[in-house]
Length: 386
Image: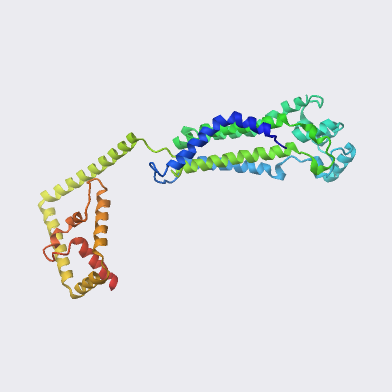
């Protein structure tokens, strides 16, 4: 099955204005993604997993239809016969391959049609079922076979289009899959129109002068192979772009400034609620005499344990050794600053390493140079040394 350059040019002129702007916009979105707001990669939601599973199952089904066991047999291929072989000889060879040397009803119908070369040529274009089962077709009017073959050609395309519209619907898969509904539907329609065009424009007379079996253009079997493979590729491609979109890896439209502001305001509201709850707990502890005494006792106990630990000879020796050989004060200050920023979440406008020492006020009177982060790190270094 050959496609001339004029056909390709006509298809490009017709479908180019539809597909080219889409391709350019997708390419620009991929190029601009690192420069604009790149979203965090997220796991696939269950709705998109279901859509991808359906598309993959349908695509594998199309690929299974391509296997020889599910394909209509070609009488000339299985008998290794040339197109001009006498009808009786051809079907005698075929019957020898059948169980009990019997022919099926379809074989008998084809035997009655194979009396003319025109019928054999139409057999190579439309396949055995169309030639043997069409009740109103005539080899003198090849267009009648085309009319009878159109439903069988459209069936897989229509089925695939229904599946695509289902899995890309907003109610079934959500907004991210719905963005691909129009491009996928256009691609499915393009494949359908191209399939019908190639079938109707094929010149079956090209096989009339070909005497050898390898030279025959087996249009029906070639077009059937390309039909199911192209539909499978379309479904796999759609499943791939749905996966990339659903996980925010590609083809993602960044949120608008208004949506980002709304998200920040919601986050601030949640933080404010947590701070208010912490303030309520702190006020409760402060106003209750028993809880206040337990809190003061806890911190007094912590200060005493820290002082006793810092006065031990092994701890002092280990701390001095760490300060001299291992500890980098700048790295320590930077780590404390990053930790404080992570805790505050950037909400308080935190900056500078000096703000990291606010939590260890009780330990300052003992050693002027040892803040709480330094004490914690030194103790950790001592444990590592042991």
